[in-house]
Length: 303
Ligand SMILES: *[C@@H]1O[C@H](CO)[C@@H](O)[C@H](O)[C@H]1NC(C)=O
Image (tube, rainbow, N blue to C red):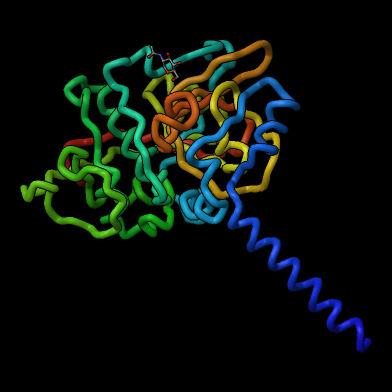
């Protein structure tokens, strides 16, 4: 017993030390990248600015409360026959003037703000071409929302509920800085013009997401992020290696098939140097990406 106590202490110290030092290491190492590229050919791993972050930094930018709230949302459960869904579809090809550019959230955990504002802009443009080129301010949504924890995370559903009541300004009024201070004026000192969202819809399986995208445009969804995903550079992502880093809201805007593999076409908000110029493909059923897709369309004024 005399010897056992210090021995146990030693073990528990080294366990907590290794968890701490893991957090200090990069999310995905060269060895990890080599491993992913040696065991499969669906996608290619490489160094990205996200995979090179310390694990603890990456955890801090991927906080998305995807399931932690009561949803004040109109559920849409459509009964669609499989024949009605084509084997591939791209919203950017169908409505090219409605595509919003890839953004970069930096170290702020605000994927929810980027995915939600991109979807509301693109869906509004699909219905009414006068919205072409409009980008809503992720900065305003992130820094002014009381329904999220700003750069410490949020969810697409809570930010949509907040925008529905309070509105969001345009990105050319408040551009992205990542500051968590809410500004009540545009960057140039002029008053804010606020825009709201119409009904918020949710979709909880692949077929209803496909039907929603081809009928009304892109949807926002939250996916679980594993360490290997941070190193994605091209191909169809499937989970290979690493633990959960967190979750991230992304925009889903199309799908396709390769052999008998179905994949989603999505955009992220990690800038254009990550993935395929900011885009990625992910196999159906991976990372809970079909668990809760959300679509909403912009309207002129808060309701
Ligand atoms: C749509 O986006 C995908 C994914 O980034 C890209 O491969 C494709 O070329 C785009 N299509 C058009 C018509 O812009």
